[in-house]
Image 1 (cartoon, rainbow over the protein chains, first blue to last red):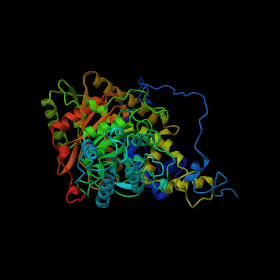
Image 2: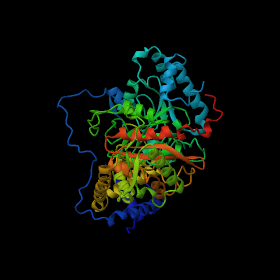
Image 3: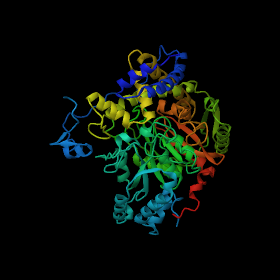
Image 4: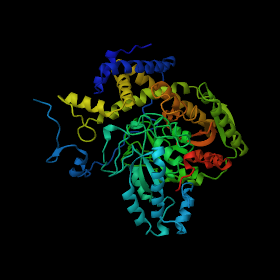
Length: 96
Length: 489
């Protein structure tokens, strides 16, 4: 049975760009450990000669004609942007 | 005149005979929502002004130009984008988000002349089985307001069950249409993966997600699937296959139909009431000329683990787009770019979403990829093969939709594994990608139970035919919940 430590949770959270407190990390460690332990059920199956399924339908690359298609107008694209100026997205200062 | 219990064709008759106008129907719909939704809490944003204007204009359209859904009201799950109508996927991270285009299904609803009345509550980003993961509110089950409506399309199922709308759209990744349909006593269809375009559906797990209709009758369900199906250039995983008229399959004739009944769907954890309701349903189908046999889908018990590894992995990638830069929630606390991302995401996402993002990130991280992700992809093949084999000898597979009826709000929200087990009978269908419907088949202590009918790839017709034959032979779909009593509209 895999043990998931608080430190591992903090590392995974960091990779996923989530800030979590020490207290949350302990809580999530317990829950993720229970979940991953339940998932180890899969190890009782021999899958050595089984092909993985990435997609249920027999799809191949879907191509379209190589021609330009007009995108959305810039003012529309900016509609949900918190702050923008001169057609560009404004973000908080993060460099000194 | 009460409109809440009318089917699409009954409403069309009223419109056709001019006993009712589209404007009146729309007004009555909003009145019923105002009356009942404070109790049920199914709706998020309402589209009253736009819908009323549209309805008045549509009354001018000549009867010869009207299709079977023309002028009828519909609610849309809040993870399906609607231009100019707030779409949040029930997450704080999308609060105030106003889409600048429509999902393909929304354009199709408009082409069919349907009136979109509002957006329906759900578990945040479609992750959950009870609607308790919504940032905004808990939707209640119209049959018992202390119980959950199921999830993640809980608002979509509850709104139809309460008679607030005759139609809604949901989405189903691991059971999110069928489980709430079962809990709320309505009809919910998850079409074959690829049958309906996912363009404009806010992605949770892209190799599983599928949009589908929720209604009170099988015929209405088939009508709505007619309207939303079809290949879409904007969704490269949508299938380029012919779309039949699904209502043509509703012949009532199931003589000679071969039904497989998986013994694994009657295993430990499935309540006696659920088992008995399915056994009774099989008798009904037998009387109509079908035969059934016990079969085995031997890898069923691995489905839950396989699903949570794969769906969480896909989610961890899909949800990386929410970074606070171009849209959605943005943190006030950021000293560096990294802090900006991390604070935005931890403030904007709820716990279940964080849990699945972390689980997926863990399963995809180096050192664990083969043990979890790749292993699960291989087991997915085995589960798919179980279905392929069964459909060599059987036309449909039948079992319960859920192990139990709806549970109480708050009862299991702190126990993720028990919550996940709710979807144990619906998840295998998504792993394989085949279509399945849930139809009402009984009650347990006043709470509805669902019969799940699973079909072969792109054979929604047979699924509908069986569901309709069952519905015609039973009265469960005519029962209405307590919230209907005393309602004025």
